[in-house]
Amino acid sequence: MQLFIYGLVLGSIYALGAIGVSLTFGILRFANFAHGDLMTLGAYFALTFVSWGWPLGVSWIPAALATAVCAVGIDQWVYRRLRREAPVILLISSFGTALILRSLVQILWGPDNQVYRQGIQIPWEVGGLRIKPDWVVILAGTALLVVALHLFLQHTRVGKAMRAMADNFDLAKVTGIDTEQIILWTWTLGAALACLAGIFLGLDTRLHPTMGWRLLLPVFAAAILGGIGRPYGAIAGGLVIGLAEEFSTLVISPAYKTGVAFAILVLLLIFRPTGLVGGRA
Amino acid sequence: MLSYAIFFLILVGIYSVLALGLNIQWGYAGMFNIGVGAFFALGAYASAIVTTPPSPEHLGGFALPFWVGFAVAAVVAGAMAFLIGLITLNLRSDYLAIATIGIAEIISQILKNEGWLTNGVRGITRIPRPFRGWIPGQDTLLYLGLVLLVLAGVYWLSERAYRSPWGRVLRAIREDEPAALAAGKDVLQFRLQAFVLGSMLMGLAGALYAHFVNFISPEAFQPEFATFIVWVMLIAGGSGNNRGALLGALAIWGVWSASELFTNRLPPQWATRAGPLRILLIGLLLQVILLTRPQGLLPERPPQPVGDASSLSRASRTPEGESAG
Image (cartoon, rainbow over the protein chains, first blue to last red):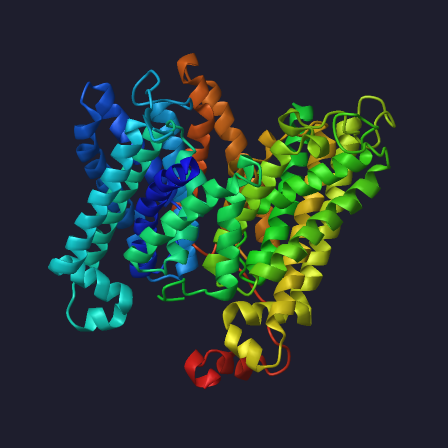
């Protein structure tokens, strides 16, 4: 049961990352390898605001905005000019972007572990389970964000246009949707969620320049599990991967948790490349 | 100064072998491998275990001659590539890329955690350098000779493969997979062969590296240095062109080494930031190359068909849809 809670917390973080990956993969047609490092960047932006004395409950807003501005900037300067090339060129470029972001984080904030606040949180004991207050923040925050995302996708013009583009890019363009503008919205949304995922990860463990890169594989596994271009699937995928990784520690060494995400990914790509609940290959 | 030049050229030679291996996978066949560092590390560890004197700290120490180590390195990397290829090579290129990240991560965790095999984070020491003491004081020069000899062999092999019917099929698969399938080519088989061959070269490069530095630990195979920089070398030099791969290795390692001269002049409080600053530079360089010259310094030049070249080249220029339809 304790593992179930660990898995839920980890899964929420994966889910937030996977939504962004799923949206950019579905709409822009390329696997953005810089997404993990976008999470790192967001977490460190929040750290800066926290170090100015702002509470974390406020800091996440400017941090998410700053991350979104960075993502849109990278898109306009680099990816937009490569959009006519094969998607795999964009993939190589995003690999470069990942390294650039990570080294910038190391240069600006230093290579060491950092935390949002010092000291150890005393966990609550609920029915024999240990629950850290931070976990409640993470779970509640994720739930709120998911509801907000749902309302956005279902009830706003931009949200509907995004779903249309993920379903069929050409058809969306023909119907008169301003695709370039929707791409900007996609980056904004994906980056803001990535920032929150990074903050939650930093809250749960600690901040480190490679924290996001290490998350890339489970996040991609979650996005593919849920079906590319399906944000709801990505949420479910994130929770499944998070729970599977935590429960795997019962049988194998925790060092090989990544292997679990990888095994799920490979099995899935072989047997159900469109994801468990359908979606595009 | 001379010893620095020898040191520099040995590393360029090792990176050239890596870039040629990646060129077979990406340049010839269009397979996206982000696990270069994993095969590099496998080769290094395999050769180290085979050639070091017996040691209680890790598996073996079988004290065999270095050329056995080189062969084992290539075979181990190739065997791993075969297993991985069987399950991942019929995936789309972007899924393959994600899968190779996972493999690289798992292999690096194994190197760190399986102490009985690799001595964990403490690494393997006392890896013998071949020809030590043949000519007193000239060990590294002799080793440079060995590296260049291996590189020449690998280059010759890659060029032969590129111009052979085998290489032509790989290019056909890269350009138009359905057409290659329709022509009766076993696409998966060809991909698997190219993936294994490229990974064997990466393993061989790992062995060359291990016997040069004499000490390896998981730290040496971080993706930044073992994977990313090799990609930048190949893209900068020109994917698909073997001479481009060599030029790219020389040019990018030159930029990398020159950037150290620059970061050495930074004030001491910046010392810990020198590494990331250099990686940042290489990353920016990659973006500039992709934006301004995506074909690289030496673009690919496939062999032209012999015979009535003018009519053939005109035929090959007809739109894809017509010829495929």
